[in-house]
Length: 266
Picture 1: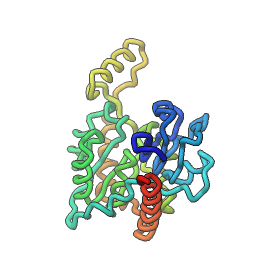
Picture 2: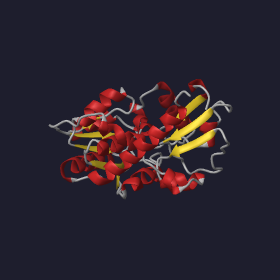
Picture 3: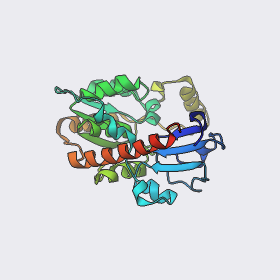
Picture 4: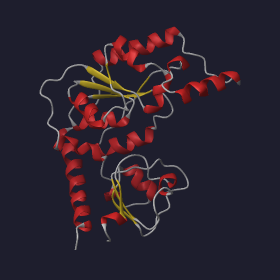
């Protein structure tokens, strides 16, 4: 199968798309274990340099024309096999999708709602540790829900804007036999809190062209804050069964073992 320098492991994220494939050296072998598709057209073009050990879920498998047994789960579901769950958990966390960051001052909203703010750009190990210490998470970012489920923490799926692609959630959750019941709140807009200069300039250019989305009225902001507080206090959230979790992790690790064996020297 060639040396390890000849191999690309495609292991996580909604990247089984032509835009991603164009970034890969055409001569290298692409080994897929856990990634998903965005279900866009045209479908990802593959050749004999691609080997699919498993993908994120059945929607991706059908999208790529793979056999049903190629549908595994998201790799992050395996975290519980290596991270010990905290015995004492407190508080409720919220992580927005990274596309929502420039829309509002989410740390301030979380502070006012009594939530632990989880920054999607923070150090992954630090974020994992923080999630592990929570009793529940509200997740606009899908991998927050995945990590929480793997660590046996109830999660509340939240839809705020169109960037939160629903099909990828269903792709993953269906491997656990779990329908996703989104809670929906209005998208908040306020250019004052844009987190980078490019975002602020974009808002200014849109304003000059008369296309700026008005800042959210105070009543909408208050409604979102109240909804987050309600979810934190009384929404039970979702959680897969222990049996479903164990099954998908066992299948994923078995397929990972097959991949390791295939690329072992000799």
